[in-house]
Structures are given as structure tokens and as C-alpha cells.
Length: 193
Image 1 (cartoon, rainbow, N blue to C red):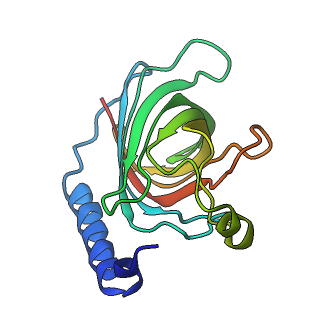
Image 2 (tube, rainbow, N blue to C red):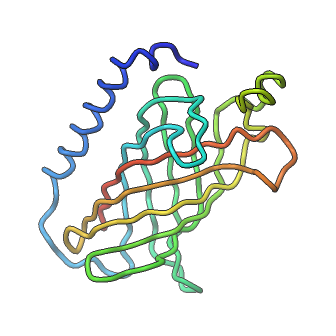
């Protein structure tokens, strides 16, 4: 556990930095124009590290999320292949992932996407067995595991949107090993080109 993150001051600095990034993204919104079905999407996000309904809060920080979604595939649900990374800058787990994003719901300016991917991480595979049993402070058990999540967005114009984002990576019920799991929750800006 990082004692600096517990003191409060670094967390406030990270929140201010996150707010400044979000405001800068809004200030740089492009003019409205038409995005084709074959468009690609770039997503930039500011995410709370190890924050979500199943989080144990053993890791900390404000993470940077970068993602590219490619043109939709021509099969069930027209998913977009995606590549991305969520970077932690205080020494906790960073991840890189590849998978598919499915459009779940579209209505007027609202959008809801679901996604599934494989994720590779740089976190510890194993930790103290007693700490894992007692405090649920475990290693990840494996280097690559499944990742899934949801994104609820509001389209600002034909090319850009803002969203609330949630992801969860875990191999629970799939692989018999330590399973720390990791969640991110935050805001993203999406730009079609």
C-alpha cells in the first residue's frame, strides 16, 4: 500500500489534474461534422484506479486511459476491434488490452457500449498467501486475463462524445489461481475520425 496516497494531498492533486484534463478536452471540441460508419474512434480517459463495485482498494491513483477503436466488423452486432492501455503513474498496475466493443444501445445522442477483451498487466502474480486469505490482498495469479465493461456516453456532435466508463479484469471462475482483479471507473472523451 502506498502511504503517500493515503495522506490525502496527492489524491487532491490528482483530482485537480484530472479535472483540468477533462476541461481542456471540452475546450478542444471540434466543430460538428458527419462521421461515417467506417470511422475510427480515439478515446482518452481519466480513470480512478481500483475503483468499482468489486474493488478492494489495495491499489491507488488516477490513471490515463488511451484507446483506439477501429472500423466496425461486418458480423453480429457490428463490433469495433479495439486496442488500448490504462497507465498508472505511481507504481501500481498498468494494463494493455485488445478486444471488441459492441454497440448495445443508441437513442438520439445517448450511447451504451459493452466490451470484452484480453488484458495483459505488469502487476504482481503472487503475494503473501496469508495476506491474500486474510485481507484479500492477492496477486493476479496470471499475466493475461479477461476484461469486460460498459461505457455510457452522450454524443456532443457527429464526431465527439463524453462518457462514464467502467471496466473490470479478473479470471474468477475461470482459472484456479490467486485473483486480485482490478477495476477502473472514470470519464472518457471519444473522437471519431
